[in-house]
Length: 375
Ligand SMILES: [Zn+2]
Image (cartoon, rainbow, N blue to C red; front, side, top):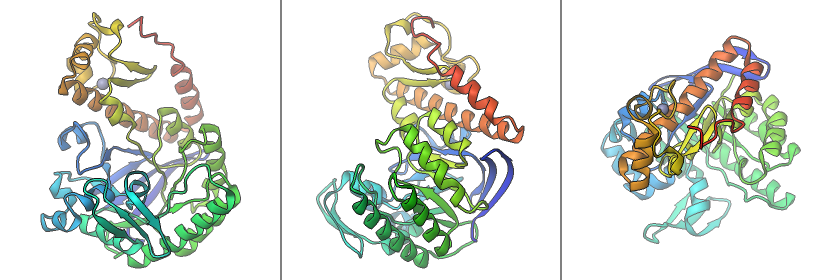
């Protein structure tokens, strides 16, 4: 194994661990801010690190098209390019190809598509995806998979999963082992437990550094997602990290950690920060709402982010109403801090053996008890 993972504590199915990468140690469970185009939108790299983040996600699809993986490699790699000294996980590009690219065609070899930027033609194979991620210098490389549309007939889900497993084997064989770098495979199989278990078994045979669970949070609903996690997580090797891709809302994170997931990514905290939405211990607030206009109180008196330590809700409301860039910057910083603090609190609860109490208290506090009219 080329990337270290140490399990420090367990509480029920919840796990407290430590990932050792070439760019530092990452405490798990961890949330990864999404840095689509070599930037966490509206944040400086220093600002991202100040939220507590030590692992961010980069998007292969976007970077291969602009500015190009070879150019980033020539400039010293993605860490240097974006001035991020900590760890980076890159996705395989598969998800964005399916969601953004035009005229895509999937075959055994890979996927051909046209760029959403300029219409140029590209072929993304498992080998090319791993090569691009190598050029970027990712600490964690993701195997190329097909993101099965939801809902799909069972036969289509099965064929798609089998293709993804063949691609995972090719990705694994292409991956160049270096200390502190690893490759993760992705469990697919839709909402079918037997397909999920077969996929998990295939990946275990291939032998990879970490196990992602893909194709969830695509419209199946939280209870179905949790059922799939309940069935899938126990089938994955205990001594390797598990990553639930593209998830999610704070309540999804708590529920998934309870079921044994270690890693997450989602655009929700950053995207919400650009649309005046703020995550708090009591639920989501919309800073555009008039009730905040005269409120001198901070967003959250216990939060240590720049928005909460330096500004009132009234000021944040004013910035959001005026469409000021600083409003997006401050709320993104706050939301990432909220997510980082939530993960830290979960790690602490697992270590203390009181995760069930933590989860119950979290659910109780998130019931919307804080009315936006109250402040
Ligand atoms: Zn804050």
